[in-house]
Length: 507
Image (cartoon, rainbow, N blue to C red):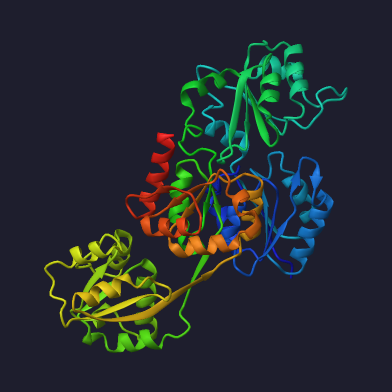
């Protein structure tokens, strides 16, 4: 039996604008065929076994022709696979989705259309331009910008557009801008009519150039604006002066490298993206189970012998309770009346998620912080379980032992180097497209450094800011030769973002 094809509108660029149904289609697809304008971030939601095929078309450079794309979709569907065909924007608005649907009908292949948010409405909205407004216009037209306005048999009624439509949106028309402007003016539109072009709308790379019909060609040329961009013509463009919101964000256009593990990068990516940053995920570490669970298992089996259980990271919490629940078949009652301590508010919150409120929270690994946190606690002769990373620094067990405690340090997890994003990272560094590199632990610093070609390090990091989550991470970075520009005062993801903001505000 044939598979099913879903022609999915992938939205205008911001991955948050995918529809619920579109996201569901991505998650369930056996094959994903996507094009140039579909956000690659959407592919993170694909099943790990899904086949992902790029068939992008960029400025006339076709990875596959439309006929070849049609043949590929048909071939995969006739193999019994469910296909998600991701198309930028909406598949039925200048997206050739109807042509692909016609091929599927001819081949008797079942299909669905999943509408998407088209750039024709999303890019103006993100530029602060409402396409309709009762004080300005009640009419709106979408027009392809690909057609040559000078050809004799144009299917576009330029006179009707110029004199009868309040707002006109041209898609894919940057190359034809001079001819579009000339046709509108020649057919009666006033030369002082407002016009704007929005490039890479809804993404951190968004750029808007606004002017009048008689000045926009020079403005666009001076700005070096190229495809992909949409063109908005009409009085509503004036509203951008007070209504723009997206491009005003403080980190707009800054490309930030995230070296945190892929599974834990989400919070940092979300916070920085909200501030306008373009986040490049290049994980330097991967968190994995330890080589041997026996020491942790032995500690859990004898948990009643311990007075204190201390967690130094969310990973320690997660791996400990996963082992407690799924291997030993216990729940939190198995911990008895053991006291708990955590380092940092994020670890505290993760522990609370398992129903346990921490008794003590040292602010950091610093010896003074540990000593201060345990003031008033009698540790002499007490037994402490410390499940944490294999590569963890020794300062904490040393200081606890100095206070009289007997510390059992067991490996709950390990971090290994992740080089999956290495090639893309180095290309961006070589092209000078990175503004900031963020480090959230000493291991991210060391592994990131190991990715860089030794003879290019100085060149690759020239002009790149280094942001560290705290002084220990910063110290590791300095030891390896990094110029540390930003250090968070609060050693959390939120604190790191605040430190980056503070740096740019000061600058």
